[in-house]
Image (cartoon, rainbow, N blue to C red):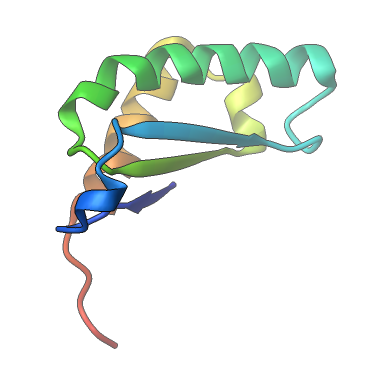
Length: 90
């Protein structure tokens, strides 16, 4: 997951938005679309918690094909929490 906030730039103050990357490694087209739909549903419930101007990219890994909705939600929440943490310089 990647999270980008617009900061204080008023020209980038669009509503929070999300994109999904579901590669062929996840499964065939039917499986990929099912994973995309499930992720889209889960992320839609969480977009309201993000600041205006935020862009979110969610990359589905192969185990997401067999994960339950509860597991996907837990993993999504965990990844969001990690993405929101301030980064420390290396």
